[in-house]
Length: 176
Image (tube, rainbow, N blue to C red; front, side, top):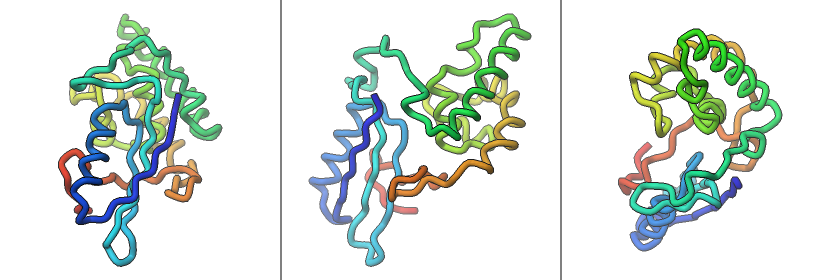
């Protein structure tokens, strides 16, 4: 089930940063957003994560949890997701492969949630490398280019997350 956790850190507080990194390392993260205070003294992270999938050593304990995109996506995002699922089905059938080869439901949902418009954007998602992106996701770019710009922005205030990438908290950086 999708959950949200908010961390508010002082940019000089190494203990709080360690707690954030520990939290991130033990959960399957869908999205990380951040906002730096006007004075630069604090950073607020909003983390969307799967509360049922706890990770250990980088692997999920429960890989049998069924992902439900409808819990994860807004109603407008679901329309894009459904179009991607339809295209995946047709594309993988043409290739004589199983549908999941063209991207899992979780991967397709993240493509929509992260507002991916290029193969480079798609490759930032866990589980999608260059070969997979070029073989399958190139077929989805037309749908994404048509529909993603029409989706509302997501903000830290809770509407819908934007496309800014957060710093990689696991590397300890706050650079933009």
